Image (cartoon, rainbow, N blue to C red; front, side, top):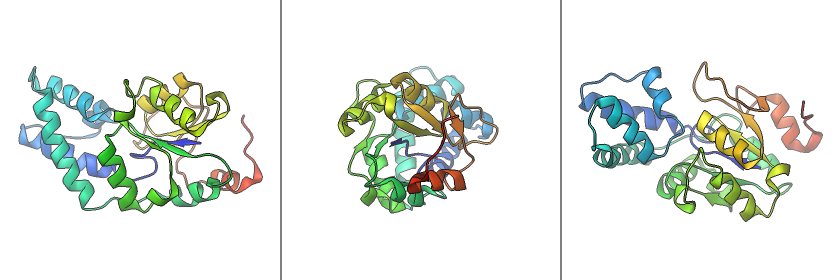
Length: 213
């Protein structure tokens, strides 16, 4: 089982949204659902490039990435909560099947998010964007996670909240469970839930079985 982190296990998207809102405000722009959809699931660098395009500031991607990094770091340092059902599901699976985190965020952000949410102790395999040559939506992160766990991607399950992550997991050949972090988001997944706290998911995680329909 391979889990995304931001917006799936940990409520870091609120941290990112506050940081993104501040950055947009600094440049005289509002920030809402439309703008969030441009950025969710991206790496810090590719999000900054998208922001530079939106601001019509060619060549300013690196500077915007540095500023966004600092804003996000401040938000994460203040704390991030585990999302509903995350701890219960991961705890139910841990020890029964191999589990890992595969995140498009940088290592420092992933480690901070897992630590602040109290989930770090549950994962011995954590993969961040620095661990691969190509970030999501390329399949590299999921392939690296499966390789590290010693499992066949075709017999593995990914949990994702964004289209970028879903494309990565599908490209790697995993069965994909979607739990969208943005309202109204359509994900090309094998099965979709509104929350990791869904009763069916928790029952499956406890070993009673989940039919793949």
